[in-house]
Image (cartoon, rainbow, N blue to C red):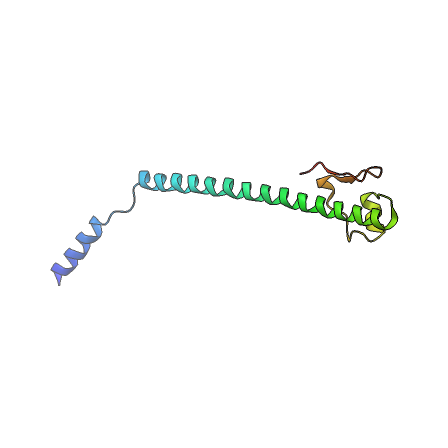
Length: 110
């Protein structure tokens, strides 16, 4: 019995944990991987915002042309909403506007 406890205590003494250097290396590697993921996702969201802005601009263009086809007049974005050519105005951050003379639609946010 004494031999068994001696063997177990010797085995416990030989079990070493991770060194501080090993732990620091793992932390640095995890930090680098996290940075890569964050910057990769950021690019995806920027492309998504640009695509949404272009889609909103196209929707306003179609609504402006529908208003012109029916009333032979180009309306501002607010008037397109009031006259039910648009359900709601696009976000102000996109800066979408309609030239009421030419019907040209511009977007400063895309």
